[in-house]
Image (tube, rainbow, N blue to C red):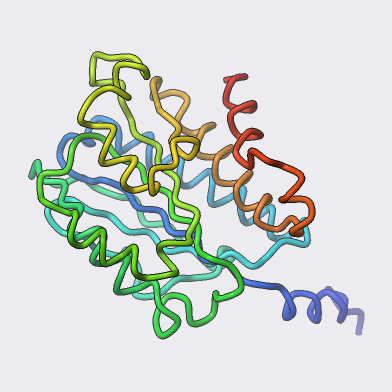
Length: 241
């Protein structure tokens, strides 16, 4: 009987390194007008990650999605490989709280080799935040605990704040109080913050930011060293939107 696969493909797949991709999404009531496009963007990006996994020799990506509002909740009990991941659409609450203390608490608890990283220890995680609005709590103590967790501290942490309702441009937003808590999330790395100023661009932006970051993670160390500004590719692609 003819095989539908090559034994070498199975061997290579088994040898693939694994990485964890965490998507953290604000689902407070202020995201209600945006959640439909956020869901669509997540779906399309996950489908493209599946295609990337099937067509290219990249690491196996496992996915976990964390929604936060008054509380923080994982959509699934444990990360799933991208090819097996079924996305259930996010829904916003009627409450206005965005409690980052809960967000960081969940990340700190799950980013360990006993839990979410049990089968994804070959790379530090990628954590991508989509949010709208200021924290409604004091999160600094829990963030400091997270920074003592090496899997969080050394993770690639990217933020995509939606600022279309802020009545300010990017420069004005950078001078506002809103900006500091996003900088706290990225560990003061401004180059890892990508503003969503037009909601219709969110799908393409999430696609570009996620796939470019995953592909870059698979480059060897020599290639990464040659690129002094690792997020330059993302910025160049976003300029064309």
